[in-house]
Length: 418
Image (cartoon, rainbow, N blue to C red; front, side, top):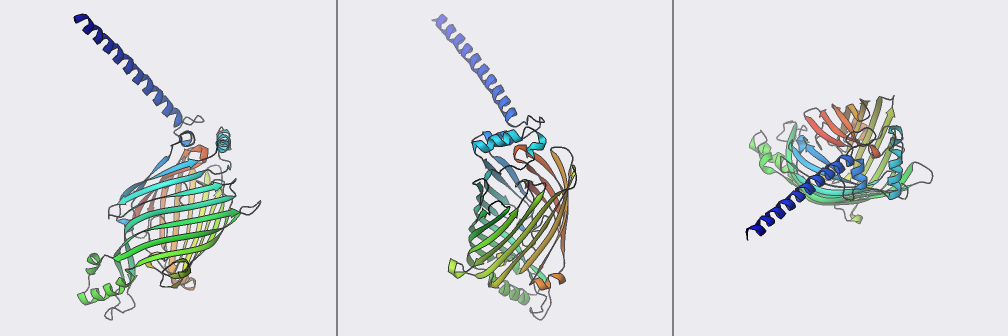
């Protein structure tokens, strides 16, 4: 009986040794495979191109660090980017990526899907996704976004008109809880043999906005004045469905849709929200954005952004008014019937992978374009860096630190900040 037992022990030991060896060998193989997948053969640096293109389930995780004071000043989240391309597009991209200069030339952009979610310190959260489709040799482009969010946002109202007990008490801050879901879709068609696209758009949102009375009640004034303030701003506590359709025009000759180094992107969108489409409010939104990218030398580059948004109509919902949208300025901090922005960004190429950026911009809001010249500018500026994380796609990611009129904020930027 002893001998079989000893034989079994030997067999177990042999089996365990073989199993351990297999694990070590397979672990080494996996490590080598992972190293190959995340290393660029061109310069031996970390790069996600192979992982994104050759792994059927590969995605690029982009962390979200929220420091926007409008959302409580702190929060975390994640965006997952999934790149889609045909076998032919993959072969073209692999061939182009064999040299650094060729890797920067224009190739048909791959379609990209995204999922995202985040949570902030003031209990705001959202979840959603989207898809950027470049179809039929980039003659048709599609952008679709959907999501649900629950936000606690600060809005501001100016009571300098003396209507509260005859006093000009100035601007006051109020916290609103905004929750709802929405869908935005843009479909663009390229005009033959041109860089011009024409298209249509559709937007549908259902939101419920409610005043946080507990926070607003202590307004720092006598109770009658606080009550009057509450009565006035409480009028915006409503549930609203917005449904609009519109048209758009786009000119785009950028060398890369993710992290462009040269080219122009100009777009105009006109959207009509109307009862005819199921909207609770009737108004028109006009949006203009112009993006410019200039290579000044092999090391230096410059970008400029011009933007102007306006609404015109009756009973425009509070969260539909244009606002200054720039790094360093809290979302919806400065709102008006009209909002204009101008921003420049300089970049310096440290080496093939790393880029330093510096930017400064200013924005204004007013009740009309005729009044925009009399309004004061809100200035924001900052510094950042980018790393070429997916050379095959010309995709750069990094961090920006921006200082606005009141706060300093940090942003993880995937692709262009604009």
